[in-house]
Length: 358
Length: 257
Image (cartoon, rainbow over all chains, first blue to last red; front, side, top):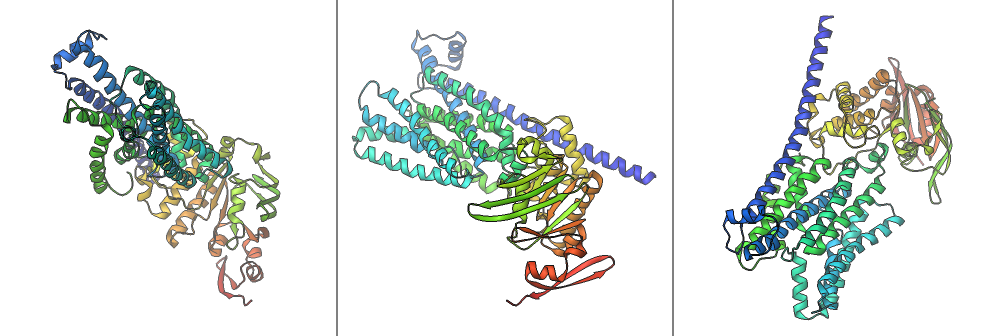
């Protein structure tokens, strides 16, 4: 009898240990979310103090704490240039990284990002077309944003149509996305072939991605886009975790795999389109940020969306701040710097990573 | 009867895969499904869990028509472990087993869900792997994790599609012992497809032999695994002998055409 009660105690101890280490594992993820949130605030705090207009750190912060005002040149540079640009960088970085996380999760493909599915190609084509049609016109900027947004949705619409005839497997969707990428690349090439050199140059810069046009209206639209779509992604995150077990297993656990995939795809497309129409295609963030974060966070999308979001925000903001400083008063398009910083960083992490993602 | 199938038929387009399938699964029973490749074993299992929808016939679970149930309700009645799937972004064993609670909680696990996971890890002796990545485990251990995941759904019926085909002999025995154990301790009913006739004979209470999309024979090992049945269904000459209360099937050679 005594041996059986001893093994009973041992089992209970083992159980306690597992429970504790699981709780610790969850807490660790929550700490990471807080940590990266603080890092974003910290970088923003530094970024706002940097700029080509000569202002000391204390001057910058007193301008901020006095509230919105644009009477002096210093106030104007903080309130109309630096703050909206910094906020837009945070919102766009967050949104693109979160969208990339869920795309990779639903399509079960480490190469998937909103851009592999042709969203960027659609947006770029829209932008080129707008620049061509409204060359030199005042309404050109509005047409650009509108066309970029609308045409970013088209590849996804076409993929949706295809998958209503055929079952929406991840492979079909990724391949269809890549077909869209080339198709819209061709359309864009065609438009640019007939455009003037200045228009082509403007389209190229748009394609790289820049935050130089940031304004408060961009910031508010981007904020609304995030407030609408991030909670929806969070809501689907647990089901997307389960999709990774395979479609059949997911179905057996009560998850409608095909429907989940379509819903997530629509949400991520709207989210991405709503952001890149202001900034141009900053593609790499959506692809690599989730990977980097998965290396230390594990694959649970409920946490990964937020950590990758803050990481993406930090990355985009740092890159843009560097871009503002290196050739001041000119600024380099943020897309170039993101790729310059993140490319080598990702390669180093790939070399150091353990097997798999844990 | 936990599960009752009547005159079920399934096909893709004009090709019929399953014809006039009728069968039953009793409480606390292990039903071994055998048959050559393409006989319809996986298709039958997938029809039962509505992964694919049969065109004709009825499938009743606890007296209720399965196609009228919501996916969540179905997931509370039937657990299913499909043939090997590689996870792209591997999760920990604990998180994997927790997925089985999907029909019971919406988004965030409650304490009782975590308790159920702990119960299951304990039952299948997986505690020491709880925080390891599923990709770090051997094939046999992974299979046990997937069974644990299906069991945390707390369904009374468990469908296993060739859970041991890719495993070495030790892991085959371990996994099948685990199946017997949960049947005994939890009173669930298991339908399991197995290629190895000796394992099927030893670990099943009853056997179901399929051939060309129909049920060819059903019953005890002695009545199903006869040299004549094996010859007709597999096209193989086999000897069946009996030692220590078990049947042993020794395949000899393919039947000359």
